[in-house]
Image (cartoon, rainbow, N blue to C red; front, side):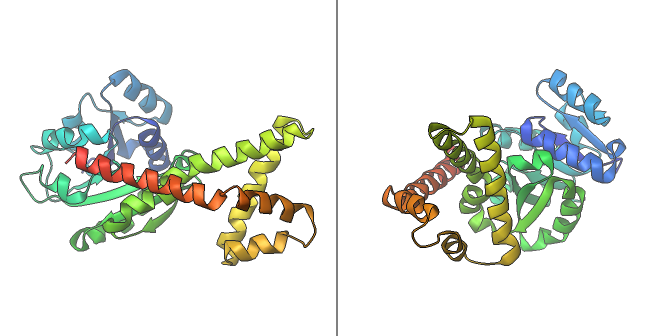
Length: 268
């Protein structure tokens, strides 16, 4: 194959993963396209990779074909690609809620399919990509991870967990941004300039996340280590607990999960 990976769709996530792939395998082995060719050309010019005039040309000569299109469009695009896809290529989908079997039914031949879910920090190389594939297609997963390794880290999970995993990996950055913003605005109310509060809160959350990952300790244990008896932290933590922090985050997670399920049903 002339190209290692092609990207159909030059949105935020498609662009971020294309940039990561260019760092790993080089722009000469990457080709991109988009419904708006102007947008795809802008990405190709920025990365130094190749531009395809349409989806078929993007897909016909690439080992991996990445579908960075909206869930409501993915079945149509998959059917469009059927004439040029072969069993030696791998179709990669990142559409929320759309199952592998659902895409396989759009094809008139057996083509390996991998389902991924990247999050927005992939754009700066600190992302997390969930990956799922059927047993027969798992042999392609390690190669895909090697191509995209500049985007961040990976978690291989069963496809049955993809919709709930989407909440933990894909939706949670938005929740974290809201929490950090709330801290900055709260400390602004007691005299700290917002910009300083934002920097402090973002770095503190970054460090707290690293503590969980690097120590392997339970978040409750780490929280208790900060909450000295009679101190300022325990007073704030008490207010958060009384205000229903755990409950409201759980409700948000459930709402996001239900929407993932709904997206799958809407786009079967």
